[in-house]
Length: 275
Length: 294
Image (tube, rainbow over all chains, first blue to last red; front, side, top):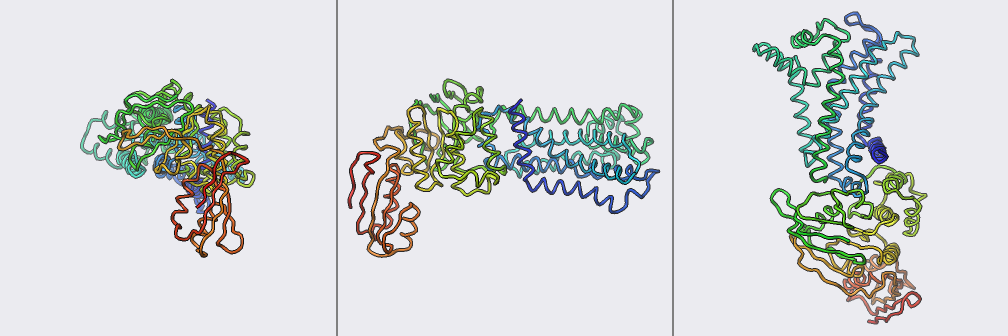
């Protein structure tokens, strides 16, 4: 456990000095700053105003950029470290492979989740200072969703990094995975499948197994319980699930998927060549 | 200490190691030589448990893949190319000492001996150090912890003559308790450090020979050189060995580490037409030996 912690700490330290982390933090901090600057706390949508409005916009933007950001940065840095000889040296020190892999996973998780969370928390702190009404339940739900989504795509990123032998192949694969998941959002292929009268069970299964769709539906469900903004697949999902259980699913499923993909990555990492 | 039995490694149908059989005992100082693609790096990575392989490798009777931590606890490794780590020097030392379950003091002591001022670079990112500083630090991490096998890939390549001499002296102190595997493209780079040469070619051992190791690793040679005229290229080359001139740039003197004599003579041979006299004599305060006069 001590070695896992040491590896996580070393990975955090490496990441904090990387350019990608600087850009990553600027993007998410910048989004919040821009949303404030453009007066989104003042505007109104479907009755939502103030910080609720800002958080809703933030979470939608996060869904668009967080997964691809996590995938690309994880893959670039993990595959890049392997390519540059960092793995060769650090793996020559007496650290077990499980401590190394999971330490890297936990360290990387802290690094990708904290900027997203801190940007949101910063908005809340600012809201408190300004005396705004704080939407605590929305904040907590969104924190849980972002936590879950970050873990999920980090796990997928670690799996791809293990499978791909070069940074370029890894990056291309990550982009394809993201594109594939993006296509199966309700606004794109799922809508077409519904038009083609594919069985509702198939569509529900696809929607429920796509972490992006799960996140998107759950985050909208919190401010739009009738799902007016969503396409037809969301209605199907709600008919089968119900609001409460869907929110639970949206927190648990991406966590489980991230854990399964990361574990698969670890098993492959342990079995094959580490370099 | 190290046993390889029918060890093979294949990358996408290309056999890089072909049924290697080797035994390396404590006290062996092995030069692992061969051209690019000979299999040196692959063999080292198999020993470090970083590559899967067919056949059997044991280090201290343990399998480097299955008993990874125990095996790596006994191996000090210095790579040829320093990793581009962004963490500060102090953090790297702390990390290495923590995972190796040893104190940091000995590592600091070795950096000090190698002439690296740790206090000036503690907060600097490792990647920002010069090639020589990185090499010294990696050597310090490898030698500053209790190990009985040293695996080094061209360890002295980036070191100045003084640091090379100190490194050779440190290796000499450990030679009876340790085995050493020193990888290099060229035998003359490491010849004086070793007592055994293993040459690989396309994944096979084509030479496994004992060599004379009468040169003491810590010995020093005093040397004076005269040239017929001033030649800037020679001045630069000889200055890089720590030599100083006495009146003009035609009279030079300095000391070279004993194991470096072949490299030094190799450098001098490039300026043979320029030399009017060369006198090399072993420093008798350290070792008894004979002189060489040209």
